[in-house]
Length: 138
Picture (cartoon, rainbow, N blue to C red):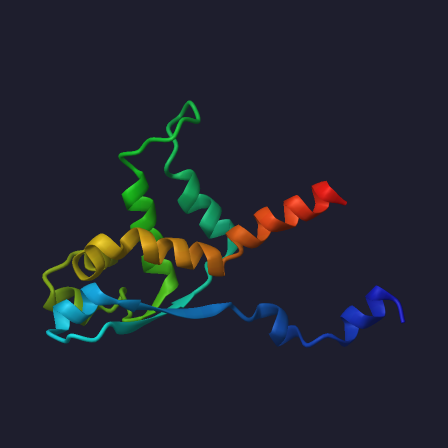
């Protein structure tokens, strides 16, 4: 059976599935007044959007603008955190936040980078690096 024939038999829904995962948040536990970390649900971000978010960290000359890194990480959370839903208008209002990015910062503060890194991992960022290494070593 050729590759094309195999692909024609493949489940289309499987192709569209997003990678998901969880991370435990001590910060969210603190917000809730709990001692045990709270499970936060994550999903991958499609590559086009992830590239746009990562590209927003650079200035017009292609140099990393470190003042924009945190905002890019917050955007990753907005797109990749599924529970709690950071785009929920009632939740934003409850916490006095005007945007989902504000809510992400309010809820996760010092965990933003860790969560953004996990979302990037789910989105295949590390897998691509490993894949490149495999191709180079072949």
